[in-house]
Amino acid sequence: MKVKNKRVLIIGMGLSGIGAARLLREEGARVMIVEKREDEEKEREASRLLKEGIGVILGPHPENIIENQELIVVSPGVPLDIPLIQKARQVNIPIIGELELAFRFLKNQSLVAITGTNGKSTTASLTTELLKRAGKQVKLAGNEWTPLSEIVKEESEIIVAEVSSFQLETVKRFSPFISCILNITPEHLNRHQGIEKYIKIKSRIFLRQDKNDFTILNKEDFRVHSLAKFVKSKVIFFSRRGRLPEGVFLEGDSIIRKFGKEESLISLKEVRLSCPQNVENILASIAISSLYKVEREIIREVLKEFRGLPHRTEFVAEIRGVKFVDDSKATNEAAVRKSLSSLSSPIILIMGGEDKGADFSPLKEKVRRRVKKLILLGSSKKRIKKVFHSLCSLREVKDVKEAVRVAFESAERGDCVLLSPGCASFDQFTNYKERGEVFQKEVKRLKEEIEREVP
Image 1 (tube, rainbow, N blue to C red):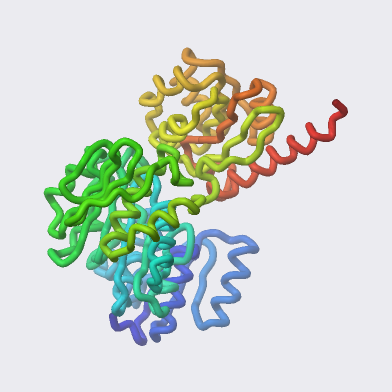
Image 2 (spheres, rainbow, N blue to C red):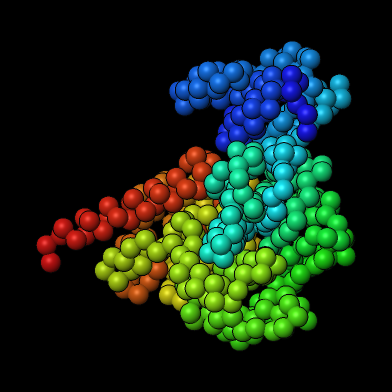
């Protein structure tokens, strides 16, 4: 992609926008970033970028900013219906996203792209570890790590990228060697305008692949499985429910892979990350690494050691026989369901956050059977209360600190206090990480107070 001396406008100054700006500047483009936020953090970042020769405008978008622009790069968090983008379309300025931009600068790296409503980060991280342990030169890119645009020109043999629906909205030529769709459940429907459009956007991950590429699909997710008929590359399935003629599957407690010969790899009892919501992530990671010829012993070694990522059913502490678990990354109904299924103890569930209009009614039976008390917080608490009010005891709280203390007061020895919000965090926090960190801090503070008490 030739961008030397081209005028390029980047909308959004998050990690992706900054990564795209630096890549373009390195390639000789004349780069300008616009960012609506005006605070000390953005001002500091703008100062650094200006020293690198990258223009920055903070605050409202100037009406004439797109004049003479030859390319627009949109950051993932920016809605595609804002006036600036609509105006750019009217005057036929090309519009792409950071993912598409970075892809066009790939050289000889083999690209793995992993998407899904839940589990992308864990699968990408585990896949990277499997490939590294096999001696491959691997880079990891995505929302949790470094944008693809920042590492695409670095030396590597394989790049593993976590890819979101927001990124896939703006791809055109994007075509990985291996694509993977883990699952599809209703999410971001306020932006994507319905589940059918959301599925269509997810499917863009494989649309440009050909017969020399591979697509890894979840056999047990009906929305994902139904996409197989549209795939032009070779489809490899994974399944946690039964045997496959080819692929990776669970038989009893044993993980089996079958690519020509059949191998029993490891029992789930030996896998450190074996809670139910991670089984499919593990199977997908094995399927991907198997296409790179990763040997059985390496897979066994990694699976016995891999701990997973923070804020995903992460044990925090035990206070007087009550366990506290942080699953702040659970930002939708499907993730909460998996989290509830992964725990055997009676549950005090902390739920709520930004109200995105999600349907929580599919959780009713799971909540009725597994939850002793439901503690609600955030802008969605009133609506969630309407769904579950007749199923268990409920309590509304103002923040995470109060939620932790009310949960402990309500719990008995042997119970588990689970933060699994089912909602985004943006009504009270910057992201799910900050929410999880606050939860963990409050749990540890409570533990210290209890331990200081005189017996």
